[in-house]
Length: 435
Image 1: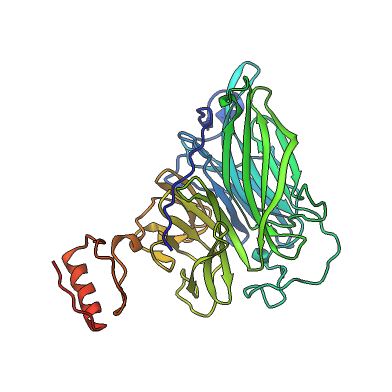
Image 2 (image 1 turned 45 degrees about the horizontal axis):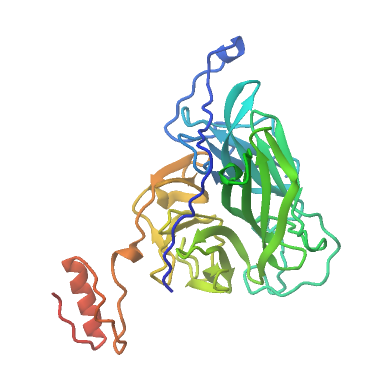
């Protein structure tokens, strides 16, 4: 299956992201030393106790600050969560101490840069979204809606007691603005998302661009994927308004519904553009030892890789925790070190190992062709890298003997590649001439 993928272009007001000042100003600031780091780093990170469960770059920001989500466990086993902001100047990941995350679990984070007017001063900040929940997911070791084991095809479970819906929590740092939204389908009060595996597909539309009158509102939408009360893995669509004229998140005009669901163990979600004005979203799946990719547009798996593409093990598949894409290729990470890519011309995830990104783990963020991931060799720090080419797109597939080839199709390859392909085809009984 060959898909031409382009990132969805989103129109909204030009925004920049606030740069923090490490020192200077008041006497309190004078006691804070300036920190300049080579890589984004959380200086309070505790190895063995802390885990990175979310990372994002504000979509469309110029010289923006990264946002991250940290999970911590104390000596008694109690867990807490902290939102971090990475200063683009100093590269220090620091806690947003004014934001209290009170749910038992949180996973993933998205951010939208905004410009607001506060006391006649322009403030450049962001709407930061995360998902909180009480029901332990399969990614935290929970059982999930899966009678055959967490990595096989799921079967509907017995009816359970009512469970609390997960919450989409929205925060605007520096402005003391927040909102919390129950992730319950507006068409069915009994259908809710009860935990989150991933968030993705953030899109924005500025209503000021509409001809019906001057409005100062963004329509913000995103997808969340996790376990639902239907004993399935569900993807929910959420849409809300942000009024940048009054600095308010409007929770009265919400749109929340289940987009679709699957019986497969699944984790990361991302939204792509098929190139024919039809948006579709993809899910990472881990089913019966196969690491796969499910396309809701065609209602079928796009492809699957036997075993774990990050480790090479064939015993079990991998839970892909995060996706990013640059309009041509999709990149993914898991809890095992490594980066894999997909360009949709091949049948498998391709391991990418020519740079420091081979040490990526847990989470990804992207800005154009620049990406960041958690560093498995120095946890609490991020690796910054330029997105590599996915090797699938650099050479044609080897065609088995007996299959007809469209004579109008041609490929440009190096002499060495041509000789290798020639040898493989001749070994299959075909006659080949290298030109």
